[in-house]
Image (cartoon, rainbow, N blue to C red; front, side, top):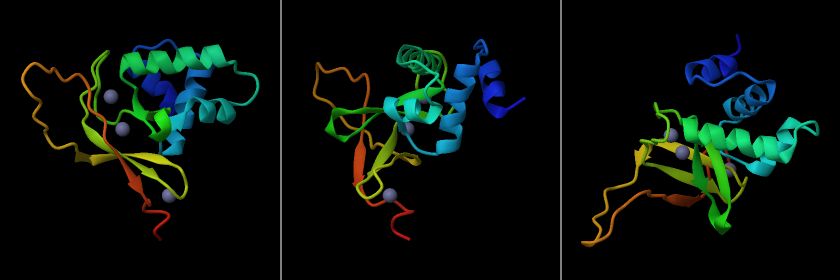
Length: 138
Ligand SMILES: [Zn+2]
Ligand SMILES: [Zn+2]
Ligand SMILES: [Zn+2]
């Protein structure tokens, strides 16, 4: 069994070739992917709607999380911590490289705790740091 197929099983997701291929892309990429990246990575025999639904399912099940990109775009990245259905536990920082354009999860770097004024409830926090990544700095 491939590791993508095993992950689907671990998360009680029905196995389809489409799901396995999408997950494989993320496992191999090592950085966040936008919807378009997934679409191009899969080739022409996958339609947009199915890809969209697959990403949606993976988000809901805790396999992927959203990464807010600069310019308001959304990318998706693998959850490395154990996220349960509907609950994402991480508060790590994302890094966008100005040179190669890749956005990466910095799993070890956590967003510092931020005190909100009374009357504000926090639901989500996103921190995107921009600069030059490790590979581009070599
Ligand atoms: Zn997560
Ligand atoms: Zn880079
Ligand atoms: Zn992340």
